[in-house]
Length: 230
Image (cartoon, rainbow, N blue to C red; front, top):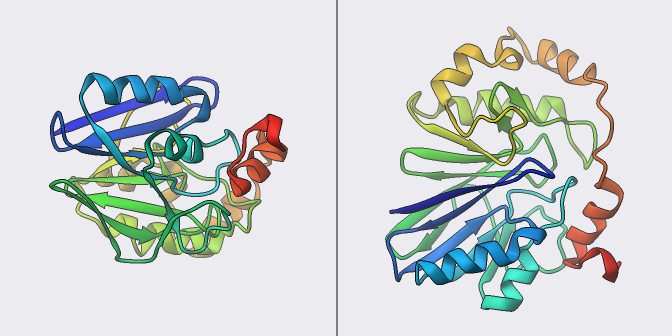
């Protein structure tokens, strides 16, 4: 299997290129616009045909390459059914399957960071977007976020996956590339709570500044345009 984890050091975003082998169909998860040429180069070098591109949610810290990759490769643009994106081709719901050549992703609706956040389970690994991070969880204070809803997504969905399941998030700010469900259960400080109320209290007291790109990234990603087209 081809599994490339790429990093954008401006937004600390992880992007994933996945295919069963060289010369096969490929999909990309959470691409960053400025990295489009890099993705296309990798696809060309591996003789891959990009057929599907997925965003785990509407991003607030970077502009997605979802639309640009579709223009360049004619791939299908995929998001969850709650997404307000105006350019998505296929909207998935809980327990849907996203398939390419010999690879299958199961969709898991994991709202809380945003109301359109999805995770995607592929055999021994799960792509958690901004819902479950390594030693953290995605903030819940904008884009219809909800700490209560995120608690449910975490404790009643993601943390019920097998403990050996590898966690691949959409971001990391400390140089870590992956974790496991078991490690997060045992070590993630935000998950060491006894109740939903404790979790809500933690999330409501983070006092984080808004992402620098938020005011332009969100509308750009909703419309599938670049900054100069807003």
